[in-house]
Length: 156
Image 1 (cartoon, rainbow, N blue to C red):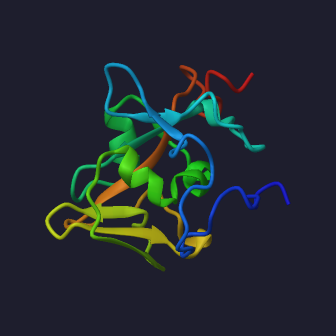
Image 2: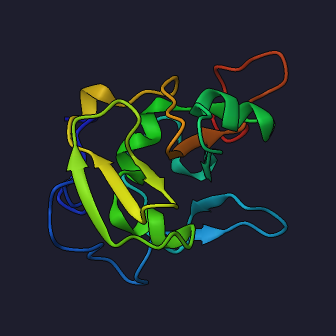
């Protein structure tokens, strides 16, 4: 199925790590705190294209809608399946004592105070709108064309 990730992406509750090489599919964008999908990593079929992905960490208590908007981007729920992996935390240099998979509308997210990181166990619960005062969310943002938020720059 087009929307279901292939075996290349471990499930949220898998104990294994990203199977690819390099060790993370993300790269830090120059002059930014956003991560993008590395160009040397094979790109699974996706709409919008993965080249539009910009992963950000929200502030505590901030939704992904707000975090993306503050960076001039829009939250793209279709990208959650690509950032809901352990390597997303290390890409943002988040120190996790452990990574748990739970059914919680704010996950994937992390708590700096408690060194807790959480992945979403149920893909139906991915939400750009959720927020929690104790957590920073991992946000799947993308750019958009002026006057047409449905399309990203690489969409045409």
